[in-house]
Amino acid sequence: MQALYSWLHDVFISPSVLETLVWLTLVSAVGILLGKLRVGKISLGITFVFFVGILSAHFGVRVDPEMNSFAQTLGLALFVYALGVEVGPSFFPSLKSQGVLYNTLGLMVIGLGLTVVVALHYIFGISMPNMLGIMAGAVTNTPMLAAVQSTMQDALGSAGARQVADLALGCALTYPLGVVGMILAILTLNILDPKRHKRNEEENSRNTYITELELTNEALFGKTILEAVRLEEKHFIISRIWRGDTLIIPSSQTVLHEGDHLLVLVHPEDVEEMEQFFGRRAESRDWNRPDIDWDAIDSQLVSKRIIITNSKVNGAKLGALRLRNQYGINITRIDRAGIEILATPDLHLQLGDRLSVVGEAQEIERASKFLGDSINVLDKPKLFSFFFGLAVGCILGSIPLAIPGLSMPIKLGLAGGPIIVGILMGAFGARLRIATYMSNSATQLIKQLGIILYLAGLGLASGEHFFEMIIHGDGLLWIGLGFLITYLPTMAVGLLSLFGYKKTHAETVGMLCGVMANSMALDYAMSINESRSSSVAYAIVYPVGMFVRIISAQILLSFFL
Image (tube, rainbow, N blue to C red; front, side, top):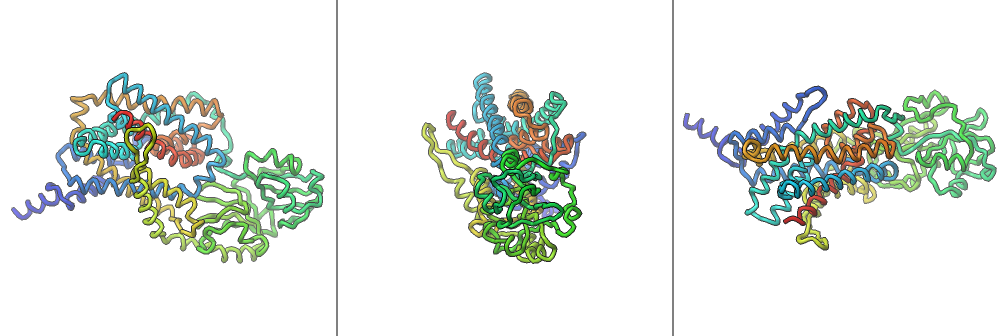
């Protein structure tokens, strides 16, 4: 019996590496299980891991602090780096269209939030570190909390251990209402905008638009397509030409004739300019519908999606491959991580790109073999680039950056450094012939593993004084202030987006969820809108919002230390 007691004591009670690992995994497992519970359409998901950790610490669980700190650090770094690699391929293309407006509105939310934090600091006399902890929960951004904690530890050392713990308490107190407050804002915006400015949801996620134009511009009669391209600054692709009853798959040397019907792919904002350049619209159907059967329209041609899996093509410019000349096919669109990109000659291809091609069946088959088109190849993870990029991100995050006017340098930290390197690796790794593609399941596994480790460790580290703070401290006041930080900025910018910029409800709330890093509210928004626009706006704003929150919180803190 004594041996059994000793074993149980070592595994569950005495702080050690083994005991810490056991409690981290148990807290994670129970939290994931509870995360499946829903109240209506609302669920806190994996955030339950955080609260199970808090409850465990409250009831006496104590773990090895160094081991727990390592688990939090590793989990956070894995999560943000995998996120960066995931959004990197589509991040910069998205900025060329609706991304600029989305991110501008997101920055306004952050700016208003910081203004509210400073105002509440002076009104209620709560210290700025604690206000930033409250804000981290209110905007459901635990990486921001980690960055502020790191800055506090660098500035105060071991003497500030309790203050660092209070930061996590503030986050824990305000996190639940951060989710609920965001959902309340979504509902309020829905009520205030009953018309919802509905439009084709597919159009919102596209960087390409298909239009049929009749050639009436006399200046182009007798010109080749190559000559026409040189006359127009805007990028466009002519994928098909109807000349009477004859269908032509054009090449750069195809001569244009009066009355030709051209199927042109352009950026949505360039459609009117294309009409002025080529001629009037002659659309017999909506060419942007997702359910068009292209094979039925072109009986002698085949339309197919080809996936880039040939490593030799990774990083190559589309124009340099000369696919049209070698195989007689046209590449009309490219899907990169859910964002459609216009197939321009100077575009660098990446593993995982999905090319929409048109041509004869035999030639498309030949092109498929050259480009790869083997999904099994993509199932093998590119581990070298992942760990190398993660190491570079951690090193970047540790570099102190001196900013004029600040009393101490700031660091990107293990939340900022890896996400920046992840985005850059995902976006430009192919140009350096570095394969960074990971399957969606692998990416989601790494992200979930990372954030769960971080939340479990954070809960175990901060739960000892949680209920004491609510019952005997200012916990209820902090919860109320957190709600104001959540609700006021999102409502102000949400109304501006809906009525000032005429964005749809789905786009608006997706953008707001992205800048608030609130995936739980995003799930709810998508359930009431049934539109992909919300997830697209979320993905565009999330990385910029994450980075700016991490940096701005440290800058604000440095003024008050």
